[in-house]
Length: 337
Image 1 (cartoon, rainbow, N blue to C red):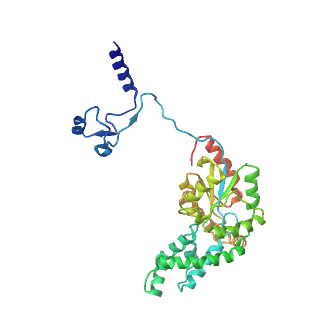
Image 2: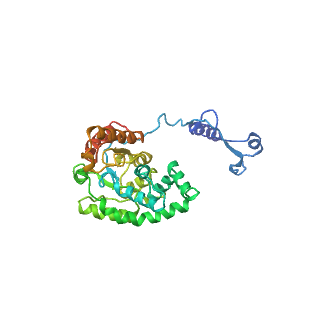
Image 3: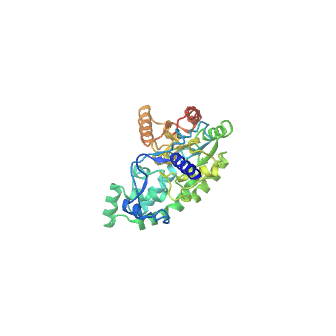
């Protein structure tokens, strides 16, 4: 009687264990399975193989749980040049021009700006890989630029960049007021990412603080394994800000790589078209444009940022609060970035 009850219980328990369609995910070779006695100790994984395409089923439940964040945005991560200060992103562009001129291979402003948003060493490397620059470099030296050249130019770049940063720290009109509104009126934490290295950020944050702009967190490009377009600076911001989930963060940037940084991280990404790298003019120069030139430059900037994957593209940081409200609406409806 007791033996019969044990068999019934054992059979019932087995029927309730998770099963995998018609085959197990891990199966043993038939001849090995027959050769092994029930008391044999567990074998190594060498005699196991995966069965592709199997579907895991668990008879204990008919449902799978999916979490949807329905709360509000908790934090924004802002870029520096072209987003909150240095309208037109002049400070790095002019230094790239000088570095390549010193090498005897001058570049154009368009070439200097194309990789903007990346770590500055990566930026230099990408310039040397442009076909036009490669050709001029070969004509000058009889060879193409190599990693030794990149390292040397970056070494020369750093002091030049630090030396001129203070000339390009004018805050973009409305940026300080908008940041304060986001913090005090919308209750958001404010982080920051950049293609600049830590010594460069140290210069920027002191100058910005004098104007009333003080993010809660600073993350520089040399603090992570790889900077933009990789997600690590956003994730490090999230850790330091103590903000989760990632859907509760909005990344704001004026470059394609900065937009991709946000989408790669899994958060909302907003592109700024007017004050950044693609219009490439300061506020006075923008005001002096004809209507036709202004619309042409702005449309090109919008197209680049939208094609990079931005969830929203707006003119300046001053238009960000309504975007946050719209993201809150979408989150409440169960949407994800």
